[in-house]
Length: 456
Image 1 (cartoon, rainbow, N blue to C red):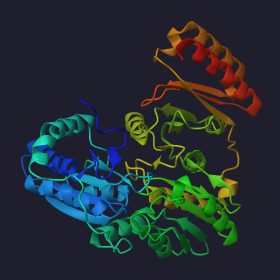
Image 2 (image 1 turned 30 degrees about the vertical axis):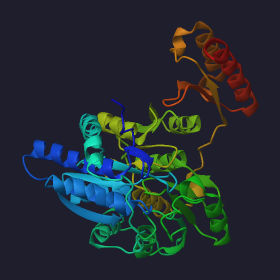
Image 3 (image 1 turned 180 degrees about the horizontal axis):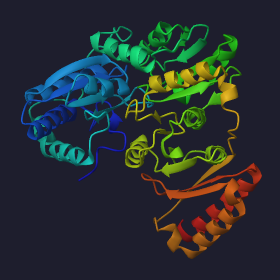
Image 4 (image 1 turned 180 degrees about the vertical axis):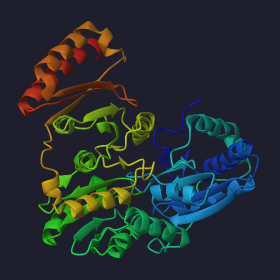
């Protein structure tokens, strides 16, 4: 049976399997049924969505399926992914569903399902839902559902209802308690997404002067040349406005990237460095460890090491970062892309919580973001993809393992080689980081040539 749920939920083009109305209705029914089996009662499910034009009819399809299975639903309307995760805990709900495709273009959409702890749905239940999808798709389609759905684009994406206000109160009164942004000017790129109303309101409520950009969603402009994947305009606006800080969210605001007053981009690695120093100084960095993925720059590892701190790496995906945080008891983790998890505050990566946490460091330390990132040097990186016919273990191919060992020895402690296969394509990925761009390019070409000779 084909897996439909990946590390970040279920995604696809809206209107096509598995993000068509028929399938999403089945998901609603299946989720409600499996929850009722576990609980022995009708479950309460919270649902929210980002600003894509497909969001309203997908929410209606999910609601049809869930209510047909006797679930109670509460809708948060347009709200961030971590906002739904918070509401599940706050309302003592049994699950939360986010209708979003995060940083993808508007044509796509997706489903993320959260459990009461704020973490994502377990894989066992995901497999059960997939089984129900494949068992029932043909039956529901035969009943006449065209699977497309068509509802006019919501015209209230910038208004806040009671559940959005509940989340906003939590951020301002609990996460932002004692934080004053008076005298701080911020440029906020909302990606025309779920943070379009929430982010400016939150930061202004705490006293900040906010210049909001890309905060007028129309259903089709989410992530379009804006937000965390396209920070060029934000960098220009920060300089133009003489702002103290710029922040860019993605479509569902579970990640955030920052721009300092000099217009320089600070990614997730830089954010982890700033927060790690702050927590370490206050004895709040459990086990003196930061959790990140294999994609985090070796410069972060060396910067942390200079303070006697350890970087633990996981596979790519905030799901794996969270698993390691919970397993080890560490208190800070994240991804280069801007997903930051502070498990003592939330088990979901939350771009708004990350923003408030970074602003707390800036205000308490009375330092600019540029000053706070000193000591972290981003090392040059090269990534080469090699098409392969077969995905043999690299260590079992003598010529590849020999060259890889030689490169690692030459890089020493001031560089890093990551050799892995793509999970979706017939590609071997060679990623090398080091102090010299020309050196790592030569290393990458050398190793890529050997892979091509043996597996290509």
